[in-house]
Length: 245
Image (cartoon, rainbow, N blue to C red; front, side, top):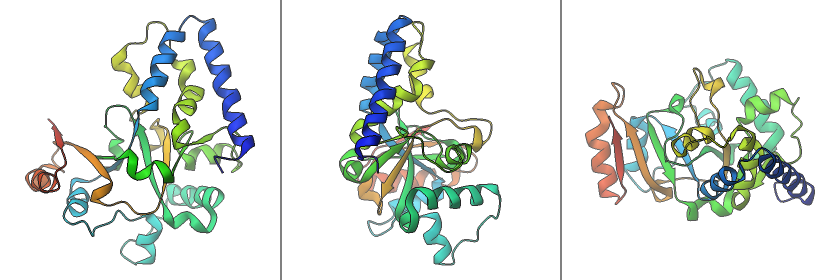
């Protein structure tokens, strides 16, 4: 869908308008720099330290999806508004293929969304680039606001993710924007998960320990019992793991 000519053209129009507006207000340099960083952004998935341990424990362990867990009867639906919004949005975006999609977010520094877990799992680009597309925002909320019609130019293939980032975020850049503010411009935690700000990544198919580039885990009361084991598992897999204290 992201490769359809009308989608590509609509994104190109949004991107060009954002660049021209940036030039008019004197921050073309900041936008160009942010675009360079976004072109090298990674996809990150946040999970609990316990779940990260499971995934790292064997190359046969896979990251499951919401729908697979329900079908396997190892998880009960919460029955809250998020479940309802997610089901409707996924049906609108993916139809019968929705149980094959894994969700991630774009990151500049490897840190992901903490509402989904203390451990940020950064994915290898060469393992997902051919099977990933990028979406404007949290698709469950975004599509709800747009009555489940996706506005043209709201998604892109992986290689064009920087264009989507510029189309969405260039207006937030000013001549005084600092370098250390850019990671949180692309991805930031809100007071609730519904207030998180990010660019969503949709990945087709399975993810395993082989899909990971590195990990970042926060030292919190919830993660602390698993930190040593997680460090050992990542070291055994030959993957770096940073602990944020």
